[in-house]
Image (cartoon, rainbow, N blue to C red; front, side, top):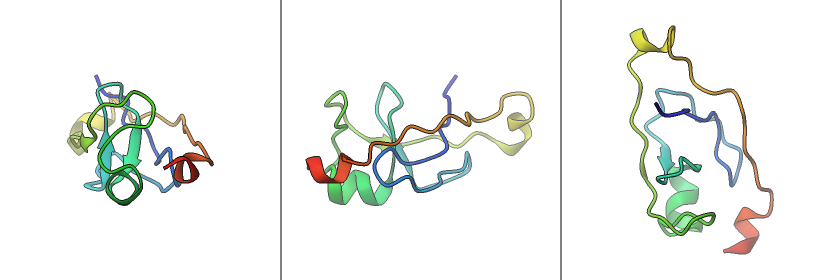
Length: 81
């Protein structure tokens, strides 16, 4: 099951579980669409994998399967690319 991490690793933008703006790689590194497209050019800086739209978990499933609250943030992400 996906963690549904709560924020962009590059700019720390909030990405709630129902966000259409979240992008992930196969390791579930999480980025907002703006960073994924304009900063990272669709490639995960951590593994080199493709960044794709993160599926949204239906609201009625979140109660028993909540999204993660653990944030991952790399302040140097935008500087590296």
